[in-house]
Amino acid sequence: EAGVAQSPRYKIIEKRQSVAFWCNPISGHATLYWYQQILGQGPKLLIQFQNNGVVDDSQLPKDRFSAERLKGVDSTLKIQPAKLEDSAVYLCASSLDLSGSNIQYFGAGTRLSVL
Amino acid sequence: AQRVTQPEKLLSVFKGAPVELKCNYSYSGSPELFWYVQYSRQRLQLLLRHISRESIKGFTADLNKGETSFHLKKPFAQEEDSAMYYCALLSSASKIIFGSGTRLSIRP
Image (cartoon, rainbow over all chains, first blue to last red; front, side, top):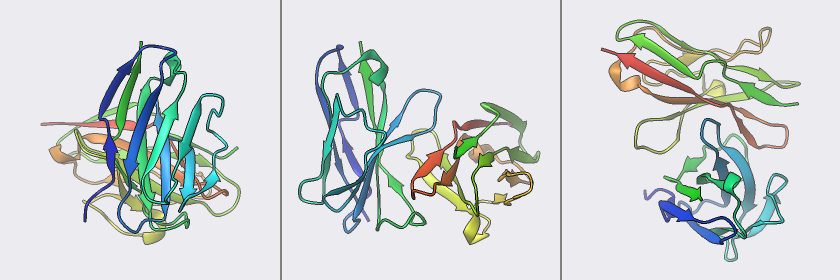
């Protein structure tokens, strides 16, 4: 089966610019996750969708980050405006449903550098 | 607070030597724990989870509630085991909490 697709793979922007990332989960997976992984740290959950609804966005910096999954399939994560500390790898993952025991399948990630 | 601690950033062992990657957790109740692995130029993927009680690629991990640990072990390291390993905990809010990771390097 096709895996989780993410684009772009790399992005370099200047601080205060905007950026958007795209994710297409595995077909049939209802739950989609966005993680932020800062260098030297483990992934940190930003937001979790079940179909097109937000399940958890408690760690999303809502003053500058936004995410949507309008049709319950692919999703976009946006940062506006970006700060230097947003430099990280942004990982998208999907799983069959909300059960925490379900295996999460990860995309290759988008590496963001904010200069 | 629910958290995962991996005390070693880097672990280097010789091929054929035993490997133990340490993981400690903080959680009230019965935890559900995982090990994820990321090989060079590959995606993060699940290696094993304690509820499955399985051995994957020769790796095992036993939950020790008394020591709040979930160390990953392999009796004889192979060069292809070189990777980044993350211990993870399923939180009470059904979120995965990752440790900071340990880079395992196997020397020939």
